[in-house]
Image (cartoon, rainbow, N blue to C red; front, side, top):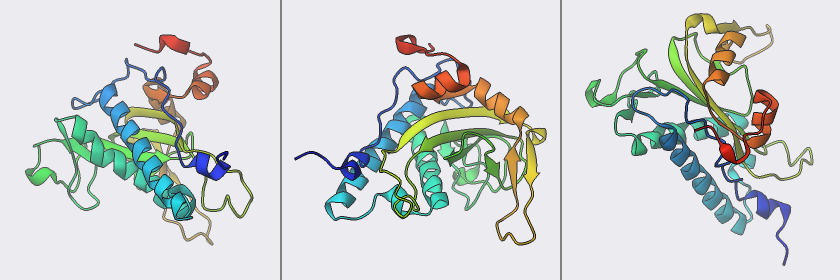
Length: 228
C-alpha cells in the first residue's frame, strides 16, 4: 500500500554529504565532523519519534508544538549532544546561563551565569535576522531548518519532511546586533537581531548548506566536490 504524504513526512530529509564546508572555523576544539554527527543524531531522533507518533495517529512534533518551542527543542538538542562528540566543550549547566556551550572544565561544575567564552546555539526557520535577548559579543551558531508548523494543517499546507537548510557561525561583536522594536500593542519580549554585518560574517563562515541553498546564496553547485 503506498505511503501517505503524512507518513513520508515523518522521515526527515537526509543531510547532503557534499554540503559541509571543511574550511569553516570553529572554536574550542569543535569540528565539522562533530556538528555533522550531531545533526545526523537529531534526524534519527525526530524520524523515530514522528514515526512512533504516526502509529498512534498523533501529529508530528513540528506540527504539534508551537513554532518557537520546536525551534528551542532543535537548539537544545544540538547544545546537549555536540559535547558527546567533542571532549573539550560542555553544555552550560547554569539555568539560562550564557553562552549555551562553554569550554569544558573552565568553570566549576561546567556552570556559569555569563561569559563571553563559548558558543551560543540557536535554531530557526528563518534564513536571516536571527534574534537574541541582548546584543552580545559571542560566537553564534545558527541551525536553519524547514518543516511544517502548527498552523499548516488548518491552512491546508501539504505535509513535508523536516530538513536542515544551513548552519552558519561567526564571532559577533555588539555592533553586529541591533535592538528590534515593537509596537505599543505588542506583548512580545524586546529582542536584538543580527544585522547585515553579522549576517555576512556568518555566511562567510558557513558550516553546512543544502544544495539548493548553496546555489541560491553562494551562486554555485559544488556537486560531488564538496568543500574540503
